[in-house]
Length: 203
Image 1 (cartoon, rainbow, N blue to C red):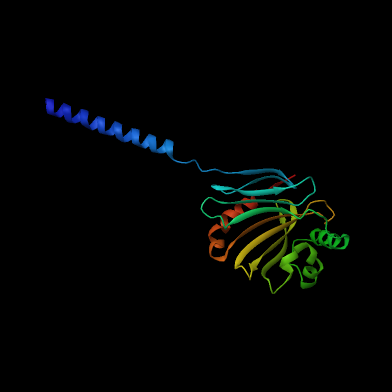
Image 2: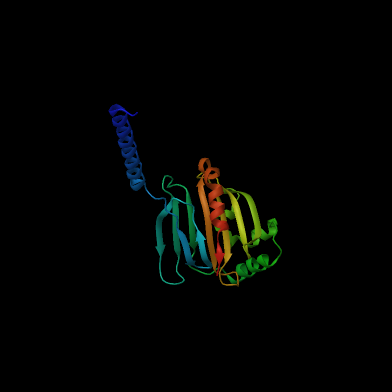
C-alpha cells in the first residue's frame, strides 16, 4: 500500500520532470536557427545552395552589364568567402574566341599555350610569380562546360578554386564564381564549398 510519503515523492518527481521539459523547450526556442541561402537567377545560374550558416558579406552592383561583386562567408569566418563576380566589360574578341573554343573541346587539362592564350580571361592567375596554380582544367559541370582554376595567391597566402563561365555563348562575357580562404582555413571549408558549387543549376 502506497504511503503519503510515496505519493509526495512521486508528485515531486513529476514536478521536477515538468520543469526540466520546460527548460528544454525554452532553450530550443532561444537557440538560433541556422540559415541557408539559395542564390537564384544570378547571371547564368538558375539556383545554387550555399552552405548552412553562411551569410551575406556585401554586394556591389550597378546597372545591367556593369561590374558586380557579391560575397558570402561563414558566420564565424569572415575571411573565408564564396564570391560571385562579373568584371563589367567584355574581353577582347580574340580572347573570347579562344576561351569559347577551349570550352568546346572535351574536358581536359589546359596546356601552357592554352593558358597563355586566355591570359585576359584568368587575369591575376596568369602570373607564376603571384599565383601558384594546381589546376587549370575544363570540366562538364552539371551539363555546362566551364574552366576550373585552383591554386594559391603567394603574396597573401590564400587558396582559391575559381569557376569561369562563358555567359554569352561567345566567350566574351565571363561570369566567375570562386571560393577563397587563408591557406590554414581552406581545407576546413573546401568540402562544403565544393558541395555548394555542385548544387548549381544552370539557366
